[in-house]
Each structure stands twice: as structure tokens, then as C-alpha cells.
Length: 349
Image (cartoon, rainbow, N blue to C red; front, side, top):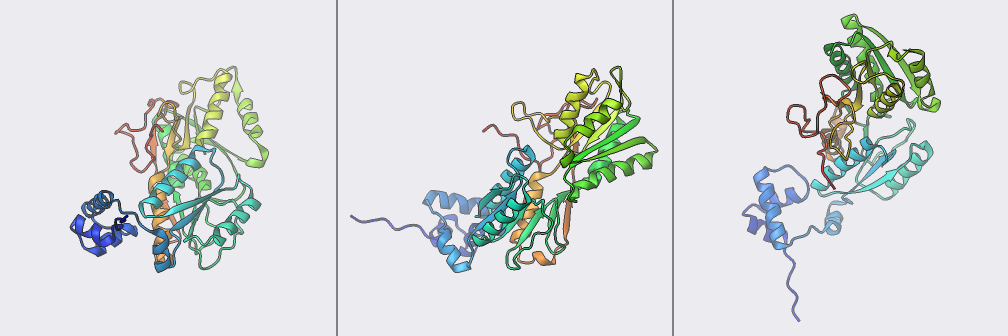
């Protein structure tokens, strides 16, 4: 019984009508013209050609696998970020090894070492441990937190996001603003949201207050502060910027339980661009992080042979979208007037 020969890259090149080098560039994740990429992929599908990553790895001394180190899958931001990173890597022919640390610095260190031992081609990490030591021959890119000046860090423009939130609240008629922040003690790019908010308030001569709370204190200080500024269902502030959408939703729930109407009495803006999976609407008015572009930038930096020559921090533009907690109304993902093309699509799955 004869067995048909497996198609080769030469067969794919002949079927697609392109040079063998073009096929190689497509399969190795290097940029080519969109028309050529589509022709190569269509030819490979027609011929049932499959890239032999094992053989390719032996030739190139690569595993074609990248480690992703993340603190959680329960938070929509982290889950969406992993989704975008995985998709970006798959488009370049890479698989992923995802490890979740549940915000435990010791577990984070152990996971990092395991990923290194598996000889991945690089690591993309959102780390809560500033004292990590990385093997020199393992490329690393971080998200939001830079723990070494020689390691590239990708983030949204948090300072501009804070400015944008304050400016939008003022544009919508607010006159006394409040910034609420809860988060870890370890410094990160996200800590620039408050200073951006403060700069816009000072520049415009706006009355404001700031409240910073560490994760270890839980949210009790925030609720205590809110109660101190509540007087017979009236709140001392008419505009609030929360450093995350999750905090914004909890503040909204607390105020509404105490008779304060959102957005009629108080307008609230969060940060991240979290989407209600069931409705496709943003969970609150929010500053949207460009997740797709952040993922593409992180992957480009990781796989670039010249990553050491890049600048150390990449801050990508953010956008504001209304989500029903400000007086400019709600917006669904996909609304062309507010949709950020670099943010994750809302897909039913």
C-alpha cells in the first residue's frame, strides 16, 4: 500500500505562485505583503501543508514557544490581555505556555524559573515582584511594571488617561472632582493615572481630592471616605475618577444603595475598558486600554533581534468611551463613533 508524500514548502510556493523565501517568511512570522500572506496561507490550506515546528526548531535552535506570566485569569483585563497575546503569537507561528500566579510573589518567582527551564524563546510578564533576576539569554518584555531598565515595558499612556478622565468630567459639567485608587504597593505605570488627573485639575483650577489605598488595607478606607462625604443622599463630589473599572462599579453600587444617583448626581469614569460579556456594553464610562496594540507591541519587541536597542518604556494611546455612568450615555463595543480598533473585539464564544 503506497503512502502519498507530504507537501513541502516548495509545493506551497509553486501553488501560491511566490518565491520559496516568501513562504519561509510567512511561516516564520516575518512581515510580508498582505496579498502574499493570503496566497501562501490559502495554498498551504489547499495542500494540507503543516509546519513541522520540531524540525524547524532543530534548524533554528528555537522552541517556537513563549512563556506568559500573569497574576490572574479571573480579572477581565488579564484574561483579555492573555487572549490578545496568544493570538498575536499564533499569527507568528508561536505557541504559549501560560502560568498564573494568583498575585503571589513567591509563586511568581517559581513560575518564572519553570518557564526559563522549559527553554522558551522568551517571556512576557505582568509581574508584582520587583526583585526578579532574569537569565541573560532569555528575552523578556513586561506589561505595566518595569523591574529592570534593560527590559522593555509596554503600557497604556496612564498619565494621559488620568488627564483625559478629569477633562471629560469637567466637559460634562462636574465642578468638584475626586480620584480613588486601590492597588498594590509596588510601583507601576498604572500609578501615573492619579498624577495625570491631578495635573488636569490644577491646570484648570478645579477643586479636587485624592484617596490612595493599598490592597492590603482592603476597600474599607474607601467606603469610610464615601460615607463621611454623604449627607442625606447628597454627595460632596459630582465627578469621580476610579483607577480601575472594577473599583468604579463597586463605588457606583455603594453610592446608589445610599440614594445617590449615577450619573444624575455623580458622574463616574473608570479605567481599563472592561466589557460586560452578556451585553457587549462597557461596564462604566471608561478610559480604554489598547489591548490589541499593547499585545502586538510586546510580541514585536520580544521577537525582535534588536530589542536591546529599543527605548525602555512604550506608552500607547488610550481612548475615552461613555458607558452609562456619565451624562453622555452608554456605548456598545463596535460603535464606530467610539470604538478603539486596537481593543479586543466582543465575540460570542
